[in-house]
Length: 425
Image 1: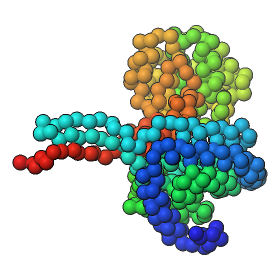
Image 2: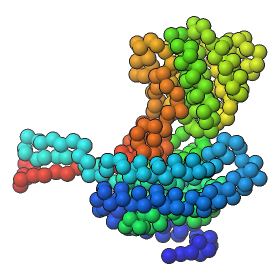
Image 3: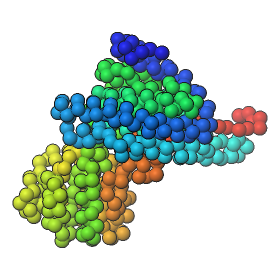
Image 4: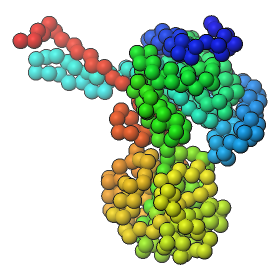
């Protein structure tokens, strides 16, 4: 096996090709493993994360110090930071994935044709999945666990801001997985921060079967523009909450403040508040946001309600702040709210607060986002909250998978045809 020192001088294209070939060989062995064996190996991996907690947190402290010194934005630092609670949640997430039903081999449907042929669609792994991500070291554990449980090999390329954290997490995971009989090459971390390695992954058609980008709009745009490998896109989270005229004021306040301020740096955080012009408590709602420390940038009608509201520019409606900032607009009813969302949403998560069930059902049916919510905070847009154990990201496209991508989204299917000697006339 090449040492870390060796890989620093290895041509990035050759490096990625070598790692991908090892991954494909390991994936064939992994795909043949029974579900309970994969689950047991993941339990070993979760235990290894806990055993290496001190090492992982020390590595993360190095990354945090470097990030602060380089002026990394507060939202990025929040995504980067690990503590005992977050590390325990990471290990618990790996365990949760282990406890999920095995998707590989599931029969999607079966039909018997008039000629007696029996056709079945069966879930199978996708193969080798490349994950390119920024700042969030928990992606290393989530992606590894989900890929292994679904029978896929993972080739991970994390951002330079989390390099020490990622290496420590990966080392613990691989030790645990190997103790459970999974080939170490089934989960590999690209050992160089050379950006050329990203380009090599994007062009590794035939070696890597799917690319999953996790990061800002710039990263995702580059991946989509340059990839010669299928991409499962996870765009930014320009998430809306629409407070309808029939919203309960206490509920609206609780949902809106939680959606914006619980954690401002996650992709499910509220970025734009829409309020019905007939809702009588808009001033109190906007004031509550400001009192809680949120900067509000509003249209003319929102500005008239509170002198602390700043004027919104055209760009604000298309901005993912990832900070204690929100844009706010007053709308003339459900139609205008949905039209605003159609123009400006990134199709991630959009929510309505209302006690009118008819209005809620129209919103749920007609807003074309990956996740649409009624009377709930958009911060629930998370794989673990959906009972999926973890997620590899929130897919905002329309092909293959949408919303939190977990085990099912990391599988494809094949047809199995059973006959009794039929020959086509």
